[in-house]
Length: 459
Ligand code: F0G
Image (tube, rainbow, N blue to C red; front, side):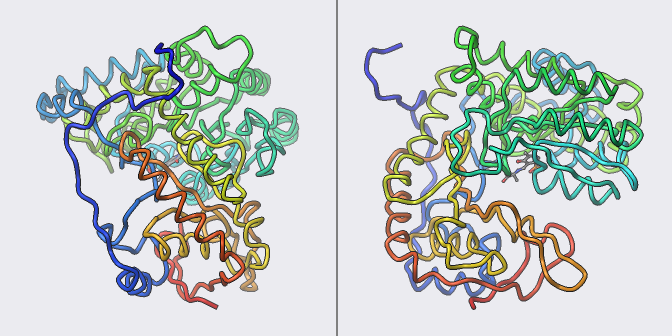
């Protein structure tokens, strides 16, 4: 380790992509065209795009070189075997099913084990996970610890599962109702917060007691492993790779979006130990994704994912990654804007409920804030609040989400410190006139995952 305190990017830039600078009039017009839904914007109308860290990162020269090595054989390609070797070494799981992204793995898994009368328990389901559980007819139950629902709590592992609540639920309902327990690392809907190894072990013990399988939603497993290394007692001497391998060895299977901690632009997988369940899953895979040795990915994608899974566990990368998210969080806090504390691994989440107390949940304060960040400086974040998770009741009213957040997700290896400084300036500008922000209403929406396509109007 160098003796200087500045943590630098552990890479230099080898190829660039130019940014557009739409002026305020263009941004206003773009908002109207998109129905005030930031998913509806043309990306060329965005200056700093923090909509998601999913598939938006920069690949390394080794990954691009791997792309040229892709073997596009329909069945049994060399690239599949390389991918298989890396995933098996990391997870210890014998059954590895490639999918085109995480939600395809979710759909296959929940179609195989979900269904009416069932319930899937998770620390917090992410949007597509919840939707795939519910689409199968099952119920999606969130059992995160109470601190995980409190933006101001400084608990080091706010993604932890409430082990007592889990035990109570399983005692009451049993394995007939609960075919699977999942733990999402890091907990995306709850602020990108990590889960401790200790908590994972306890969840494992409860699942063993009730004979229910345990899976990881592993999208951000490497960031989670680094938080364990730096925050959990007794873990500091271990490498992120050792910790990640232990995390996977505590569970029976996982779903993975390779668009996050596999540093690829597309891809995913479903892995497990149970060969009988894997057989049923492969059958669905062939029906919807593709043959079992590519499952919706090209051979070159399999190469990029395999290399990404190796690179993401490098300690210099994770140190820089976690530090750069914390850097943005510090700047936002310095501007007096409340966030979910501590900073998450892949994103900073602004707490719009405390920031805009004058906008009620049914007027979507976090949507209003996300729109204003775009309007003010072309910064695109995403609402994670009642637009995404509000439950619609039959009488037309809605149960609000527990938290109203704007997530600023940082694409991997993509933006520099000055991009982040600019973003912080935009946030400070909006903060100076927070009282002027107004709520929004939804004028059209779909029954599933409405946040992607809903249209809004200012109130
Ligand atoms: N699970 C979690 C925790 C996720 O964050 C995501 C995606 C998925 C599953 C689904 O993976 O997109 O490859 O189908 N999250 C992205 C986001 C979209 O912006 O957080 P996918």
